[in-house]
Length: 190
Length: 190
Image (cartoon, rainbow over the protein chains, first blue to last red):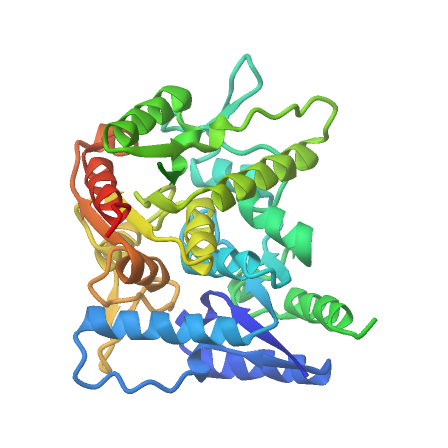
């Protein structure tokens, strides 16, 4: 059975274990084994906080190496972009040649989310470039997030996005389910 | 001569080419060849915006594959965390076993930056967990950014952070220079 690393900021939810279990159930119903970061049972007793963080890092790395592919939740997290830890994991899996499936629970594309983050004050320069309030260019390729994330997902698996009830943006699993369907199809023997 | 991929959000600066040239000069003075994403000369004529974004993605991937190591600017970018595109690149290089050197121009650690982003309103639960205004846990390991980023840098290269003049947080190269020194030392034949 193919294994799927379940990347995303739901590890930070109060009911993270339950959300991970729900994702794994959906995977199982599609013939896939989901690997959730909190599956790692670590003995962190006696470790300093930074040592504990690094132990979790190494366990997540081992879980990714054991997985055949990744489904990443790239829903915007504390700002207009996705969780940097999840972005790291997408890059890691892509480098290993493992398919990346991604979803983002958001109605807006990257540039529109940056505009909202800046209070709507993006500037369109004469040369066509889109600039934020700090003078930094805003990627304007009609993509969902930074082009490295869209690029990896589109070149190897897929990337879906769409609006959900804002209060459920970290827990709504409908687009996750779409990714599982894509991943299950990709995992079939040809 | 060892090559270093120069990852970071300075590609979005109005003077990105000049900042890239300054970084490459510092590398050269330490016996390293810096590879900057904007070194890629791409013919994007006739491509749709998403196709152009994906062409840039593929060129960046090729540049990373050509590099021996990465120096990543993880200065907070549009929120409390680093640029997700840079985080992707750190994960990519770490998976390939290439050393990661990172810097962040910020006086605050991860948890304090999330607190500032939330207007100072983090909650400490009875079980010791730190929670943001959306009910999401805040990593509290005394690290600089998400533990995946700190973990990769600390396990393979190094991670330095510190305050700079806020108006120069994307252009101040003093911590970048520290990374170049570390990378040059790591690149020496033993």
